[in-house]
Length: 111
Image 1 (tube, rainbow, N blue to C red):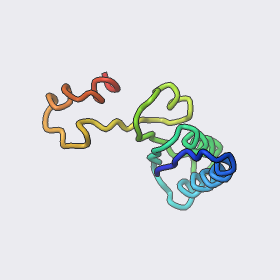
Image 2: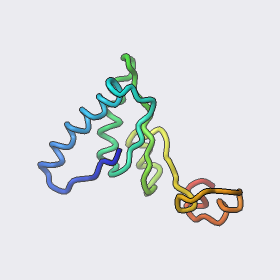
Image 3: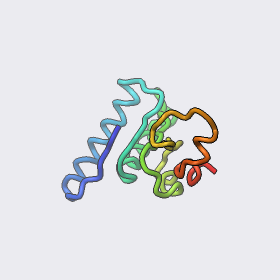
């Protein structure tokens, strides 16, 4: 799910309620096992907050995996993500460990 960050203050308010609704539907109607979120950290935080509200209820919260350019792991964790998907080798097939050792994203985020 790609959730962009709007720049208009009115759009921010409208987007927040839509993200909360989407998060609820992912959990209750889609019966998802996880949510893969790309886009802005504030939008992901809104999504994660709604999931956390479901803790102790049925269906419970789904893990949120952040899958975008990793800016700050601490900020992503603080927003509520339970995992990060890191693209390596430019999305190309990894045929050996040597392919990973030459990849900058792997070296920066996974060592």
